[in-house]
Image (cartoon, rainbow, N blue to C red; front, side, top):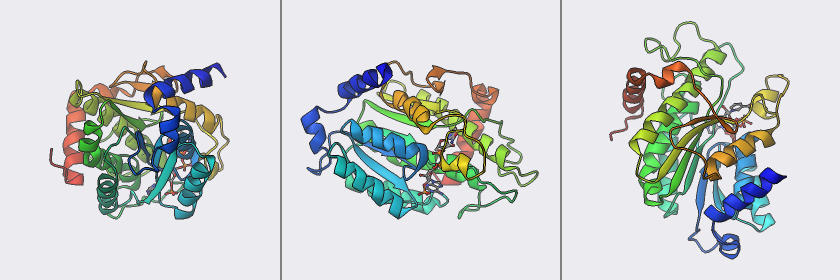
Length: 296
Ligand SMILES: NC(=O)c1ccc[n+]([C@@H]2O[C@H](COP(=O)([O-])OP(=O)(O)OC[C@H]3O[C@@H](n4cnc5c(N)ncnc54)[C@H](OP(=O)(O)O)[C@@H]3O)[C@@H](O)[C@H]2O)c1
């Protein structure tokens, strides 16, 4: 309860006034715009709801149009904040680029980007994306990398701004000789590598954007939350989606969050050792730019 009160206080400080907030998005010029990828369900949906509750305009994203439309309708009905749904399959770079272009076209600002969309596929068979890359690596990491790069000018123009990468404690070092797991595929290993890649990108991006008013953090929300990702595997949840939401909301709103940090829930934590290896990070950055065709 106390935490909720603090959260609301922090949000009020960083979000528009109550009256302006209620009109955010309806004038076509929202005061505060946040994008939560993968917000048609699970953790992303809870974060989107909480952000809309602070009066923000939320860009809801996912593949499922029905669930996206339902969340937008729910937010609009609540009468605080506003929302709009965009469909984009992160298994395709073309779809990510089109999504980013639509956001640049439709908004003059982007205050917060939450890279949350993710999969943990429940299959022993390796799956490839439309671009021919291992699915976890593309959906969980490369597409967020590409989206962030594509939206960075808009985010920079909105500073002070934040980029929050939703990662996991499940982290394993990337084998640069077999990034796409051609050999010895295992869904847990693939997931954990993609999650460490997000942390490595967080550290590099925070360095790159230091002094530009953009806070970049990675956060592990909570372990084994009661979301589809866990439930559809038949696993027993160990924490609630609300716990994860509170950790992500803290990363988004707290003034006590420091750029370039990895948070485990509410606490600063140490990531897998590879994240502190500058050579490995530089290699991942080069590879990510090559694979996504990004030129800085
Ligand atoms: N669950 C946990 O215990 C846990 C623990 C640590 C970290 N995390 C991280 O938390 C984040 C959210 O997980 P969750 O538990 O909320 O999972 P979830 O309930 O399965 O939700 C995943 C979200 O990602 C979207 N998504 C999945 N594949 C996509 C694709 N190809 N293109 C675009 N969007 C896609 C889904 O939307 P559509 O179906 O509409 O596409 C959905 O909105 C993930 O990054 C996950 O790694 C979760």
